[in-house]
Length: 366
Ligand code: SF4
Image 1 (tube, rainbow, N blue to C red):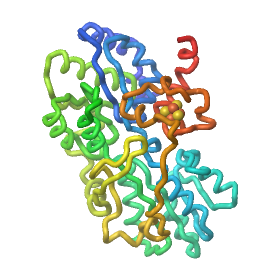
Image 2 (image 1 turned 60 degrees about the horizontal axis):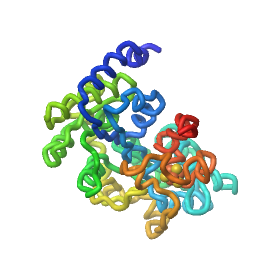
Image 3 (image 1 turned 30 degrees about the vertical axis):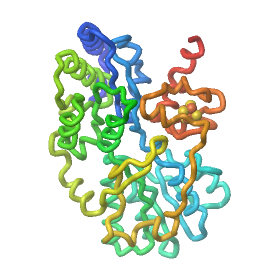
Image 4 (image 1 turned 90 degrees about the vertical axis):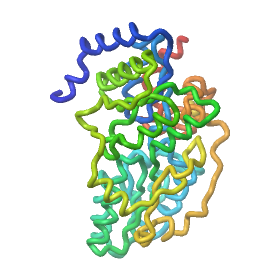
């Protein structure tokens, strides 16, 4: 496939693998904070190829996985109301809330629709002026600009029946929380390329400086990831603490300035709860006061809903790199993608789902 095959070339991958193995004098512990990278590392067996040179721990990089249970319950509550059309990307429909998921609401007669862009939801609102239309805005800095634009677009159209249920989270505060934890094991980070495409790299320099941990921004294809790891291992072996960009075809220092302007207009930073991790200060976005009329939490009065996570699910430890998915007693037994106990099994970008899809047969023989 043009533009992709060149980043999946086996001969080039072998050169990088050999370099990393030759340079590594010990096992370096590297965290990726991106569900796409987690999926690619496991699907392509990059962790296995590198043997003892690198241990990957899979951080909180899957937006579906870190969306707190209570936010799912708020979505379910709104979607169950009469006169509501609830719109979401498809991956959120199977995420279980306390009692059911959005597919269950749809099966019970709720008007739950899968859309491919938040602007589809504004069109639905324009086509259905007698209904309240809600879009579930989940994700990191990557998906936030389009969601912010949906609110701007709705205002331009004069829509009074479009609302955003906002559950946006930010990567640098999560990295700060991990690095600040007394149980932190991370020696180097692979930076999330798609997040940096929007936000640039400037937020990461202060983290490198404060915590003395190198960060290499990387893409998703096998060669992107291997090049990111190569640069990280070289830095670690040389005792250098630097920020590097190994994804220059998509990322520059400044990022997408136009997208950042929209984000700064529509959202303000707020404290956010992360599923499995808990509250992280200033780690998310919510609608700015001047856009409050589009806030679904306010419109439907669901902000008070709070619930406890299942005590059986250990995704919090998985997300912080303290536990491999297959080390969870429920993995592949009471917890599978068909009946997930936790969100890291629901999304194909979740670490537990990736291990289940690509590793469970190997692990069965261990
Ligand atoms: S295997 Fe299931 S129960 Fe265990 S941590 Fe992963 S999602 Fe949670």
